[in-house]
Length: 388
Image (cartoon, rainbow, N blue to C red; front, side, top):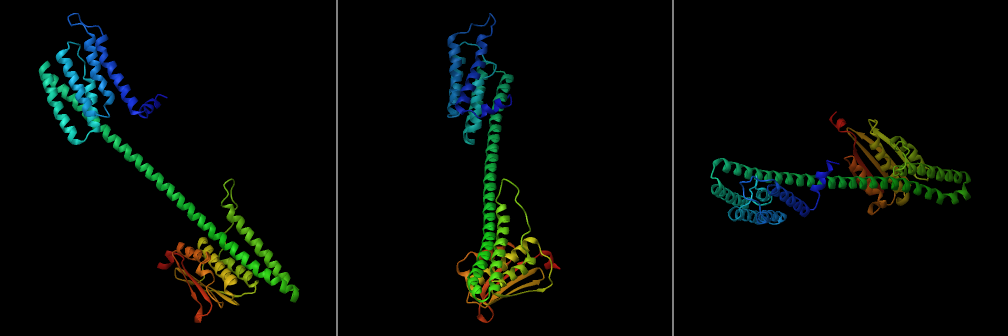
């Protein structure tokens, strides 16, 4: 509680601070008037006390007009010494505080002029009263100390303001970074949900459309089609449950591995069940890759095959994973009628974003011989592998 008191004073309105300081100085200058005096000294008078008080009152406006307040204090103090026979003060409290305020707030040119004038006035005042070098040096020393304290306080305030500005800037930077991270996470979740739903719904629509025909012509195929619809739906629900669990904040979300390259065989089989002939092969030195990279490969192939099923009207598609030194190239081609959603859908945009996240590139265009459509994605697998 004692430590909180200075903080409360610093946080108060400056006008109340100046009023409190003025009252404190007034108490100090009142002491010689209430302390018993030697009989040989002249008695105190209300006139001398009023003049002393008049020299203190300008401190209330010291922040608004520091030079004017210092001038008023010095003038009133000079009149007191010349015209009034009152008790002296141990220190010129009001003058020192006014001089401190000039050092704190004024520009260098103003401080230099005020400092020079103060030296002259102090020298004249000491010469008028005692003319001793001891009093002159003491008075100059006290005035220099007040000036130094003012400059130190100015430096401290500047440092505090700079520190607060840096803290505010750091807080803004952290907030922006957090917002960007949240935006990236939302984009990632949106891509994942798009890939999951788009693939599952496309396969289910194809199987559902083929179901009535199969019921009439080959009932055993109809049963397989409905089973494929159910299996695709269950797989999509499982993946969405994991994805949506990431968004839960009230309890720990269940975790399961992201789909990887090993899951491509099951993905291709599921697409084959829709009636599309799909070939899948891997070339080069097949090796295990980071989980994030394998998940990207899975999603790229999933998106490409989904586009083939939804848009291409193709009869066949080829999926190739070519392992190179430090790279993996994923190629999906079909014999359909064209680029699918490349003209405006979100799927291929997500493919480009996934490739860029792994330092890779994505290319789309006509298939071999200008027929069909081809998607090629080159991913960087590991910087260490490139150097080997």
